[in-house]
Length: 265
Length: 247
Image (cartoon, rainbow over the protein chains, first blue to last red):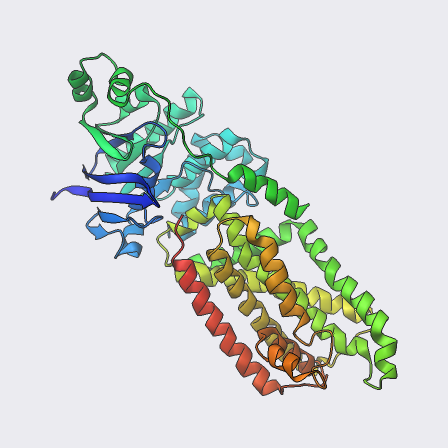
């Protein structure tokens, strides 16, 4: 495990009686683009939360760049950047202010901060809207801003939870190009989840599939296809995880929006 | 320093951008000044206790600081629900610094709100002694920090807005009404005196009133010491609970 920048050992998370993540182990080598796939409710986001110190594991260990994610949280937080699945912008700040806020929190030097912010906002085509409040943005624009923000600092590990969900092909193309160049030039390890099997097939150097809290397959995209004796990763995925539909608990953000309206009147 | 400053700046920007909230939260203090100040004023004077408006204004200023401070702390619930909290929680900054920046931001906003109410009450006839204005500002600052930290401590333990009315009715209202903000503490029943002595705001109101030239119940030195103690206590508690947040 010498070169593994992410090492997960027997990781488990229980919520009451429900086991969301069940004794999983895997490792990711430095410089890899690692695809973490699974149906809804399989435990992907819970795993990412435990890897990024947002949630304490019930059992098992996580090491990021050699640091224990429970005992050395501050050290661990210095190693990664993350683009979260749900919204995590401050919508009463402008796009530029959200970028600036992130840059200061991650201690990117001022000059570099501005240069990268401009470059990234241009990539996601929000440069012209940089001084608008985020609450005036559409869902897609928020998503783009969030990705731009996540790439503002260059961490050792970049977690992307369904980064390109709902984006048009052009934006996807530019964003992935940028991620790939970070991966090659700055040796950033990328850990991403997606439901787009084509994207996973094209981008991931290695894939792990999780279902019902357990890892059910690991390998390169071509190995997975070969093992399942099918032509596409999509077919392999269906074969491995079955055809039944999965339920995911609805997030309570919608109910919250209602409350917020009520309270602010 | 950068992260503390940016957290502070964020609170200020949010406050100054939502004018509606700013003006809306002035409604309550103004109503208290009008209804109590002018409603009870005459009876108070007849009882030989002096000018009620002079007595009431520091209490209502404290109330404005209390409300704004607590709500700034409680805003964490919103940040949690709208995701922004995650952005700050995964950052490579110690949670203590995040909490400190946030608390200072909330406290600054609350003091600003208190100063506006001071201005309004001045227009309505409040004539304080401005010679020790720095002491008055110090008391306002302590009240502001204390209750922002208390709000943070509460909000760290709460996952949804359903508990919000609970905080309102069982925390904010008792804190205000049992603080000596609207009635003098001398000559009240011993049980009530005892209850009030556990209320940190009572010392804030008393100290602020004294600094404006009014009569003090506990003595300004005691006010300062007790308030400072509560301030550090809730800062420590808030930081601890904030550092334990999981999402």
